[in-house]
Image 1 (cartoon, each protein chain N blue to C red):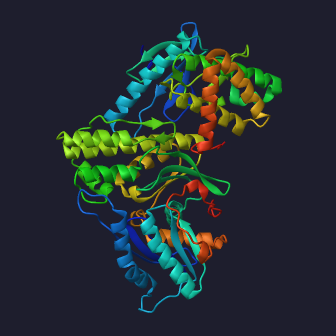
Image 2 (image 1 turned 135 degrees about the vertical axis):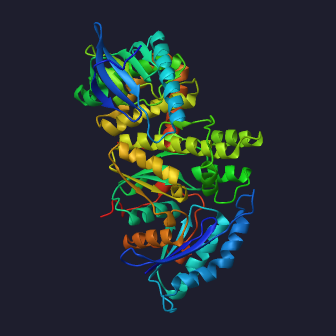
Image 3 (image 1 turned 60 degrees about the vertical axis):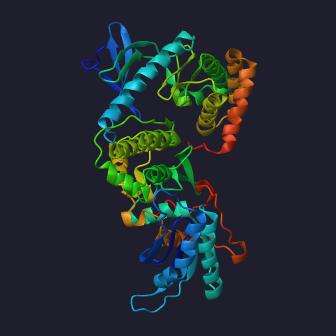
Length: 329
Length: 218
């Protein structure tokens, strides 16, 4: 049994994954900022510290109420908000030294891909990771994920969250914008920026937010923002897919919960004869299960860390992590 | 011009466009048609294909006027988002570079450098410069093709990306002495872009490579 602890931003999560890669428990609590306000790192970390004890306790209790002792403790070591990362890392270190079990550092973005791959049959896909922290198109070569394309400024999750904040729609922004978008009819022209396999979203955010302040129709703007942002990503994915000639496309991360994005990336895959593997909705957003899943794979590859070396890394690129367990068998 | 009734044979399928070969009068032509993307909203799709077709044709034409070896634009079919251009006989540099021997390869790279210098001097950056987008004519002269990602820019950053992408494709696909080939390329680039631009652009290209945003993949 591997216990995974997620605490990179707004969510504290704990989860048990068994040696067969089955998710046994997955308990999460997410900090929701007030309307019109973003996530304040300190306030989020206070929330995480408050719920940590209860979440871990619940994740470790079996169906009959007895407590399970995990064999491995995995914690999200980065990337993320420093104050939040330190909560999960502290819990992880404490459990590891108290239970005398090995401690495994996990990269949150790699974990998003791992749980998506565990849930599907993808072996060696072109991976599309879309969340508040990442917007990247990746392929696995050698021992690492390589960034084939990515955002040059803000992420897709940022874009949707920041627009939702301007529009005073509730968090998570992607969900709120998606609901409003359904009522939209007219496609408003917004900046569309694709540079090779990269995208840039900041101009799009500025234009959409400006239009909103000028009394633009909210539903139409949400609709147009979503169509434009997702089309840009889909085009970059299509280019990468043609260049890398992969036969599988994986879609992971919080924004992967969007039905419209799933539809679009699915169409790109279909058009090029690749199979499409979107992460199940319940594991798309940040959760303990992704850390447990990735931590188990890392532990099996011999990756552990001494408590005294168990730092957190708020800035940590996907291509700086050794991921020897891919391609999956 | 209307390309919908042309009989043509498919040549290549890219990410955003299909290429096919046909004939108009005595000329062998290539039709580059930007295809409809199912995933895109119809009006956004229409707008993107329309704007890019015009922009690409216009940039190819400007490159031609600047004296660069590029296809000649024969016409536009905006109804079908197609560019009609002259067909180039020859082979893709990516496939023949390794058979030229080191001296032949250096000679070709030098000519490629001259062509890029002409484009940059004319204020054009290619945006997708790889050995797959260079066609070597039977006389050995390189033609630059596929201006689908091109833009007008004189920024050292954008110019540097061109040289960096070319270097990446040479390092990744051609094993024999890539640094000697790049030196020859820079020599040619200097000829047409001037020493100042050449040294600035090359410095930028090395800086971009170090940023690690782009990787040697193939």
